[in-house]
Length: 189
Ligand code: IMP
Ligand code: MG
Image 1 (tube, rainbow, N blue to C red):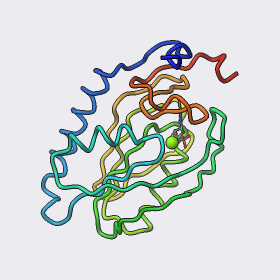
Image 2: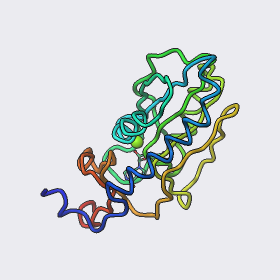
Image 3: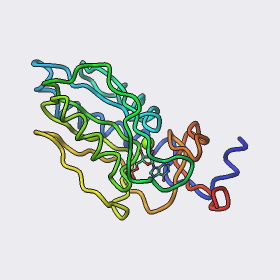
Image 4: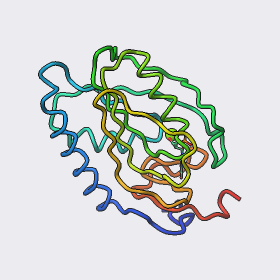
């Protein structure tokens, strides 16, 4: 595919991602199995980036869950978040008293996540967990706190490269690549 030519190297291929997603899903299934009798956890995807990860993850979670999306915008068309995400599309499901699992593509500076957690907390979630495919801890500027008995699940620690594929975009392109790869710098310089 033409898009492949813009990729410098692949960090995680389809098989590696699928294997790790299965592990995360079994961990979540195990951790939440005792909560479902009171209420089904709500899995909240952060659009657009988390849509593929979310779709793969929820099909491997063996519990009655509900699914919803929020959208937070901070990027524009660069590769640096501008630090002030805006919630441009809110939940449909009422999460009052519910266990929420927020599914993100990546935690980079932490701005988006801390803003989203504060927002979901204000809607009365009884716990907020975070499941992110990638984490770039070296880039963190803002710390985030989970809510209640919330847990942090992370697929892979990501080196400080701008990545695309498996939901990740650059200027809305590359999301449909089936792997996560590093974009050639000349593509965004
Ligand atoms: P943060 O607010 O700086 O933590 O940024 C989080 C958001 O930035 C993620 O949800 C992604 O959409 C985007 N992002 C961060 N790093 C990358 C990357 O390497 N490739 C594509 N998008 C990224
Ligand atoms: Mg995003």
